[in-house]
Image 1 (cartoon, one colour):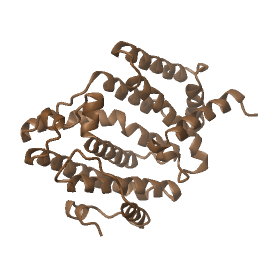
Image 2: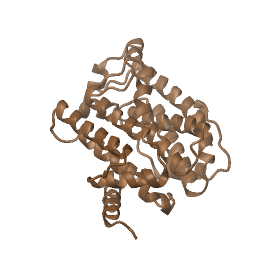
Image 3: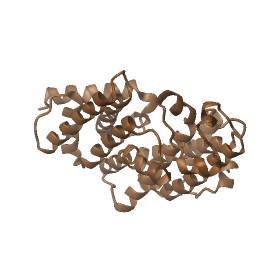
Image 4: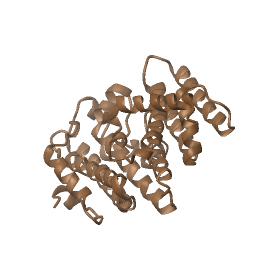
Length: 298
């Protein structure tokens, strides 16, 4: 017999996922029906914590206190204690049923704490550290749900998730700066290329800014190639969706590389782009990308 409280908690998480569908492609029909509820719970947890970190008018101390409460709730799940909040009721059930590790959830909370307290990143390794908490845990949890969390798959998933996070940073340089006061470009590389925050504030696309962005594009492409084979490790709808995400990210990266007149304009995928992404997602084998191929895809 199903527990009404648990069923209500799952429905709550599904509503959260559907209400933010534009940011949650994993709720689509590509995901096997048996995984839609646990995936929605992962998203609901991340959404709740993200709202604590970024939404509303609370001060730093209040935001950190809210995230601390999430840590306490995870601790209580680990101890087998009963939950009261809908997201954590569903999360406890999902963790038990799917044998999910708790570490990725703690990592996500670390990323949200960084969102509250940190808005500049010393070098690329500092940026990668943030991605290891903010992006990689979700991919790892999805692999655990598919029972495919082998060491090689986890490494490839990290490469893909980090690449997609870095692509988001590149397409939202101005938005992150204006709306959140954050700069994800490595500070040492900004100095190396002669770029400062006036470039962002004044939307200045000069040779220095283009060189800095090109450095990021090249590095992201190398990283995505490392993770590319994972798109063929998962079968069925899940594998196809992952390949769509990979090639969608590569297509956006192409647009970023080609926008030589304004690096601050956010790329928009066209119908032609989506046709190419779908076609590449249907291929039977992964094809490594070079920068030349990225600019002139087959």
